Length: 326
Image (cartoon, rainbow, N blue to C red; front, side, top):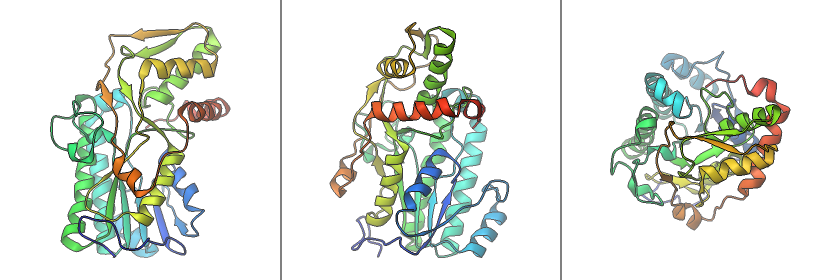
């Protein structure tokens, strides 16, 4: 049952339902699919070679044939500061097209529930910290990822609009910075943790120092992707409201401290070298996760444990993981 502005009156049961994980080969989608295997649902997936989510007719036809009852929209073009700065048109067009096609088809075909995944980068670049959901659209966006943020804002507003106009049980979650096995370690497209791990691995091999972009002073919050997947399943079952909801740990760390932690895990002995000529981005990005905590969910993975696990995965998959591109 959908309620206006509040949560549903009874848990939404996933057992036996057809659940399409859009973007199942990415780090987030694959983690969500793994977590969903514990719910007794019937997981549906499709590869990019079979279906380009930017193709409206293709999306309509695929969904009409497979009839998913639940959709987790984890598919997106993602990347770090450099990728966002050099390919803003790609980030804007691809994400707008993917979101528009999937959300509209979900409405047309009567999908019972849809979860759209946004991003903490949708908040203003100088938003008060920690950032509550009501900070959205209260100031200018961070210029280094403006195109991606605009697309994500459009997606969550679209989900809310279809909910209000048509009564669709479409919800949105805004994860903080994510990391984990299966991340993108290509230096042209990666986020901060995989970029630091890639450089730490190579610094350890060469005996050099670990290069860190910026001054190391900005603070960021990081969530293990398996924790996000658990939160997604929790929200599908227990959340039904217009407002997007933050997903994070509620704790942050300075980039310099994060880099030292990764250097220790990787065995880099030559220390850190900071590139102050490179951009820092926002000085701080920390989510207020009070609404999600009040519903009964908290992240479980300590940062150092998650980093060590992810680095071990990267070591094992170095030859293939370093070549991935966004």
